[in-house]
Length: 51
Image (cartoon, rainbow, N blue to C red; front, side):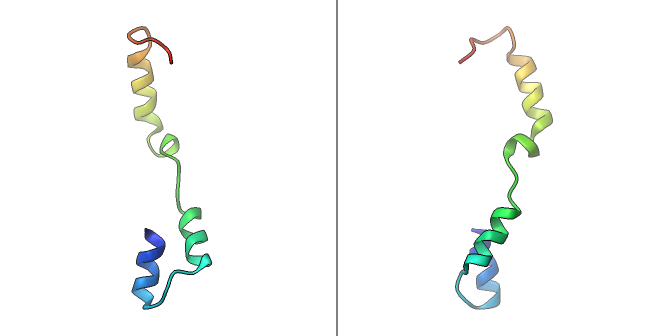
């Protein structure tokens, strides 16, 4: 979606470079929310059955 917004702001269509730039600015949730995921794992330890 961000590549579409970028292309729209320039007034042209989405290019491969726009898509690659958007992908390179994307980070996995495990990196962005590492602290909250660790807290959830600690809470779940001993309370849930491992999958």
